[in-house]
Image (cartoon, rainbow, N blue to C red):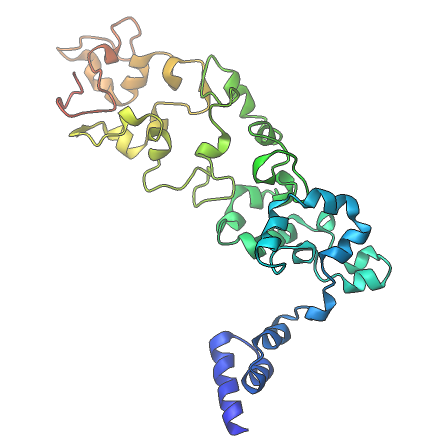
Length: 306
């Protein structure tokens, strides 16, 4: 008995189980029973199986047959995702004749409760979702995903991109109607090509990379470098120092219509020197990039001249 108590205390210390659960595990070797005692999880006998659920919810079960969650259950011999993986044990619900208060109704949960239900399985894939702007704004998993049936949409989305994103981000949608824009509405790019909708350590929800410029240079590879002579803003502030990513009325998605005005934000002292001989902020001169053609970086000239 003393040996059991010793091992129970050790197990409780290492696993976080209560002393009583530690005794149960040490005495019987039944880890599941010990965890159940600790967490208050339902007894396996409280689960009835998806086939029983289908007797009343045939319409949902029929749609669910081609669902990735259903396929996962079959892959693991029926021990994977199933109705009760999300809705909880169904025995009390069945025995009561379908009392809705005795089953977890996802549609009645708060956004944080919905997220917690999904993250039981998807936490490793989306470890930062709780700190994402979507989660903080109360946009839950089921705001974007249709768990039972999503038709032909990938990843169980309720609608295709970008229409799904535009439902909330109405301020961004007009940007893609600008004369110069990334071809999102045309279907060449998707919002998720640049943004991690499930959260990252960045406030903008951009995909997390060691260098944020990589989000742009994965397509614009000619600007990536490395270069012998780097343009400091490219390395320090990044692409957004000069470009507007979604859309712009200016060519090349520049932040300003006049190239010289854009350059003079940093290079204003050159406006009156002997070489340039121009007024600061002037728009009546040759554009800077007519001479400084390698503006993103150069391997030849420190002044970015070809």
